[in-house]
Amino acid sequence: MSPPLSRQDFWNGCLLAVIAAICFGIQAPLAKSIYTHGMDIYSFMAVGRLVQCFGVGIVLHFLGHKLWTGISDYRPAAAISIIFLSFSWLHYSAIQYLDIAPVTMLVFLYPLILAALHIWLDKTQLTRAFLLSLLTAFAGLALVIQPDKIMQSDFNWMGATMAFCAGILIATYLFISGKILQSKDPLVFTVHLSFIPAIAFSVLSIVHGIALPPIGDATGWSLMVFSLCLSLLGQICFFVAIKKITALRVSLVLKLEPVAAVLGAIWILGEHIEFMQYLGIFLVVSAIFAVSQPVGKTEIQP
Image (cartoon, rainbow, N blue to C red; front, side):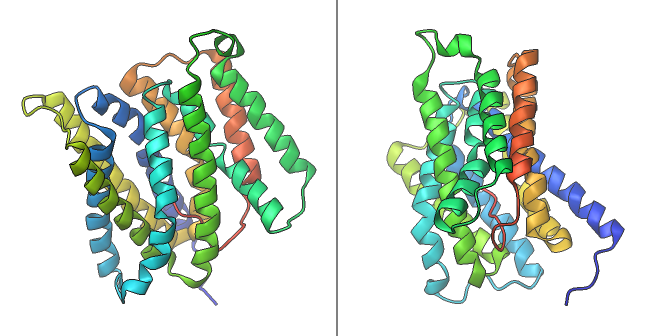
């Protein structure tokens, strides 16, 4: 039986999880800003994932985790990495068509989709609370996207479709990961899930033609370095928080990520958010928390 969790460890773990949520959430607005300085999606994802794997791998090594015992360790991660690759491409492509707020809210319907998958495939009970959360989320989503904009002919349905499909893919990815994790070390498995997409995005980046900000573009390079540092900090805080307060609690705190993404869009990109959109964001995030119940051994951070 594990020792009782001290109050200090609990609050330290929660603080680390909040920092991780901020670091992860701000990546989308940073990516959109970096794209305007000449970097493409494949190079952004390749560099980011490689830095994460290198830094986090060192941390886990010193924490006593054995990251490599044979090729069979990587097979489960490799089998589902295609889902993560597709999710990443759709998510980071969608932000080129729509503002960060609607894209983030569409993608972050995934906890509701994940709960629906458990109800359908695991034969768990369909509750009134879930249906109420679903209605709340879609009402909030309508406020974020704004019905008057949907009716306009220039509304970008491509971006909206990409974001919604990204939410479906990440929910599927988490559902399958949860099944695999019943016999895996969650920390090591997460590193594997980062390492394989890093290699894949590196290959895609080379094939597509590596596109980085111009040498003289100090702003572009500063944004890229800032993004990498935040990504690495977020991963380290994520892993240490799991050690302190367990993965299920960390997963719950990480539901604050969409709030960080929207605030980041306001701060970095100067996107304007109206009052009714704030209300919609509140409704969607509330629905996410309402359905975030322990449904497996843990959840993997996308």
